[in-house]
Image 1 (cartoon, rainbow, N blue to C red):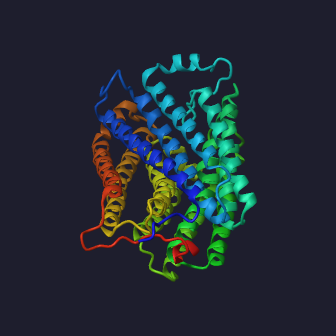
Image 2: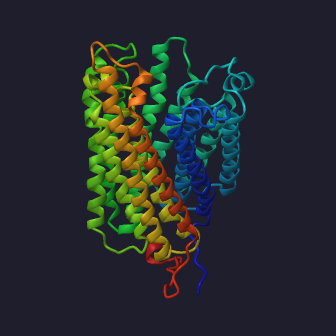
Image 3: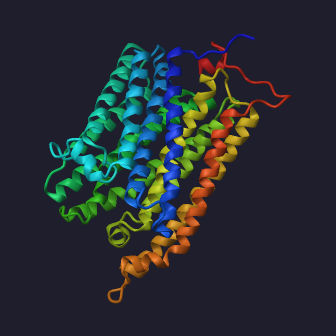
Length: 476
């Protein structure tokens, strides 16, 4: 048999990023389970891993592994979209090891060094950037992220400039450049607390509800083009509409974080109105995915990738759209802000919108990198089982957190007199926290099932589908 190869050999660089992403993803889930247990067993792993450190590692690993996933996806997609080899595969590999070393060193720093000492030793007195949620990274790490991102974007931009320009690659590049530019606000840490929170939301909100949505739309469009064979023009039109609504609602929707931090009252109206529109692009994405699957011109052998792609649109709509809308209006947010309702929305939104789309591109790309058009059906069945196990586990977690949040609001924030204190309220939520742990264990089981699919070969009577250069897959 002819040895199967990628259409562009530089696409293989993506494998490093995908493997690192999945390893860090596993670490994130393990620390998430640790956090869940610490809610009900307060001294678990104390003082080795206190709650604040476990939470910091959990959230930082989330950001890091998704960035690795986005970077791997871009390195795989851009050469194929541009119809040319990557500008410098060697540069991409060097940046990978620099980024991975910085990520591992930072996580170990959180775990092994008291945070105050870490801040002192890494120059926080010179330029104070540490101590803010999601942006806890030491100054050298933040500078390293900027250097890696600039090198990554330079590599991709040079590739796009020398090759074909498509809507998918241009939207992807817009999202990636926006991601890098918004991160620069993490270096701004003013003494005024109102301005500090405003700049902080410029990073966090305009990432997850702005630039990251562009990346998600381009990744989803790429996978659907390759797996359905639908005309690129049709998918491009859908993508333009989704991106337009995402930017309009996402940028002004930042106002729903400005309700009670000291900014003018008109943000209650601006934030409320445009946040209420934020589910629209996610609903459009759901229609888009189902429409493309129904119009498909071919039955792609990689049905697992199709499932991940469709799951992205549906669960992304539920998490970012429905659960976001539940508490986005200021009159509701007044009571729910910072409660477990927020945690429920955050978990389902990140899983649906970003975790699933990264797993979708990995599911599509990794078989090709490994020299086959699709994984054996036994491996795909394991993948599909992992999707359902993880999704059901996430549903259990989110419903438990939603119940905990509603009860928390009722006991702690609704009464005008006789309201329970925070810790007394937490004791009343222990049932929901135990249910959340059960959901977390189920999610970890699904993740292990997914990882196992990479090691499952074909059945005795099954023939692998090889990806030969010039095949219909390569021409798509």
